[in-house]
Length: 98
Image 1: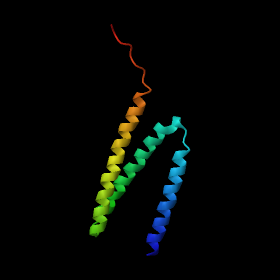
Image 2: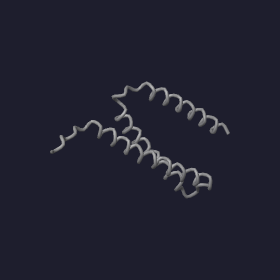
Image 3: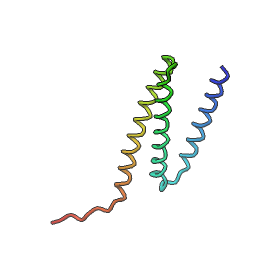
Image 4: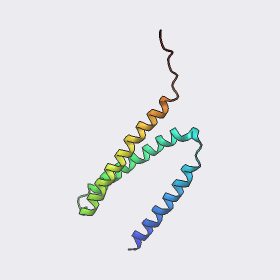
């Protein structure tokens, strides 16, 4: 039971620290930060696949791993779509031809 308490403590600390760090980021750095979060989510996808694909995994591990794969994959796809949209704002528009 102690490992669950420690894991919950680490999760709460990481969530608070992540929120505080992202809140203080300059608007100029949002695009690189989004790209970095996409890379972290991709690592979460791989980790969730490894956990849910273990030979001796319980049903709970498989279900939670499946949910983690779905959520992290959605986060990666949405992050790349948002990053692409943000980068399109910086492109020069071509003048309209008459």
